[in-house]
Image 1 (cartoon, rainbow over the protein chains, first blue to last red):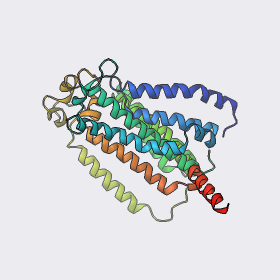
Image 2: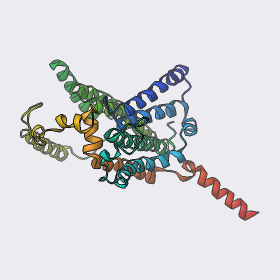
Image 3: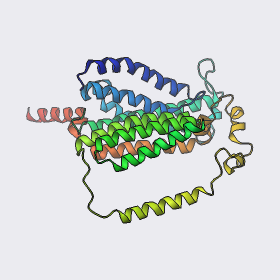
Image 4: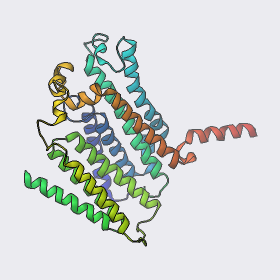
Length: 145
Length: 192
């Protein structure tokens, strides 16, 4: 944990914007540059920055390892589950076109847009949690943090 | 624009040589972070902001932190090598020469007649706006839809890498408070 007040204050100011940028990259990835992998590493870097400045115990209260390690697999499950959902609806594996008329159009995007969205969410969850978990594995062995 | 490319590439080469020559590992890690930032800037010039994001976040951010925490576990000084550097130098020269010879067959940067721009006809760039019902980002459409299987595989690779790191580095009693508590409770119950 770092005692310098300037670093602590600036970090607290920066982290919300880093998280917001990660969400922007995630959910605007269909329109602008970005996507699940980029958003995942940006989100994880915000968590790791918090851990570096405020200590391993503080970050483990925010993102408990027991939750993060489940999320690692849940992301891949969301991705593969999208594929199986399209199979259930009568298409091929990951054939998003069958999602077009299956859901309420008023609230959800249809077809390719919905498929790409779900898949990118899965990628984002897995990448965020894997990066955070690797940081935990390294940091809890050293006295660096 | 040309001189910016040359300046960044020259700085990249300089940084690489500096990293190779440094014996202070702490400084070398900092230089790899600088190298990543320079490559991120260069990828921005090549119009690849996705890759630049990733390079800046992973290369300059996360991997620098992981390298530093590794240094905290090992040591900050590289041990001087005792063997002669001639054989490694020869291997590097031959490999580098082979790689440069390989690039001679590659199409020029931005060549419209290159094979990758000819093969799927009409190309994904022309097809995707219609196929995706108006999603404008061709890169995302390629990654998540046309090449959905590949990206599923890549995500699984990330998961596998994470599991491997956990298997090697994790300390059970520190990482798994829930299981430790459960074991403690069971022991208490057995005692009572």
